[in-house]
Image (cartoon, rainbow, N blue to C red; front, side):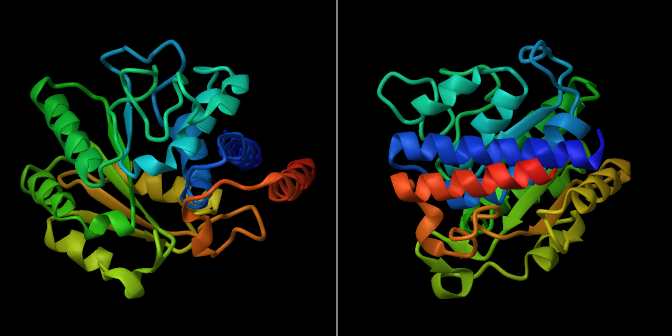
Amino acid sequence: MQTQELKKIANNIRKSIIEGTYQAKSGHPGGSLSAADLLAVLYFDTMNYDKDMVDDPDRDRFVLSKGHAAPALYGVLAEKEIIPKEEIKSLRHVGSRLQGHPSMKELDGVEISTGSLGQGISAAVGIALAGKLDEKDYHVYALLGDGETEEGQVWEAAMFAGNNNLDNLTLFVDLNNLQIDGTLDEVNSPLPLDEKFKSFNFNVIVVDDGNDIDQLKQAIDQALNYKGKPTAVIMQTIKGKGVSFMEGEVDWHGKGPNEEEYKKAMKELEEAGEKL
């Protein structure tokens, strides 16, 4: 798909993120907004996956290891017509399929229930191993938060993936340098991530701008063409990307916008969409 069309999809995902977290009066807009571009590229330009393939054993898999970014996943599932766009407004409501963290019991299109940080990558590694054992051609993609990589379970999973040469696995780290209550340095920095993944026998690609569609497409092409090792793509992104007053602000890690903020954010995104 052309870059311009992918930008439009990413912008639509961002609108869904703002809509959902506003209606819920809670949620995690910051780290969802930073991941919107990647999800647009994966679901519309990369993965063997559509609304008729949610149970197809040969489909590619995406695991949202940073499960709190569920609004971004729901946004792309709406763009793929796997869920109705109107359902976005039910985010985090009692009885909604759109839980605060993705639930595979509730919703088609969710490969694994995530939220406890570190568990998603562990499941993704297991799915990749199963693909090798079953001699399947599907590829497994997983998205981690940078704060999530402070979990020991992440590195146990990485050790296993590297030691077993799972080249059907591509990990993405959303390196926006902000986590729940501060910068990485202020909390517990896991850097340098590129050197750590290399030491666990990963092919490593660093993307200078993880909110740039073309850079993401290039990195994914490189990952898919690399054989013999799993790949880790370290994406330097901006938390809150696309909404001016949310960009680079840790306060937007875990709260929903009020009515005034909602209107301002949606106006910015509408204007951005018109320019595309």
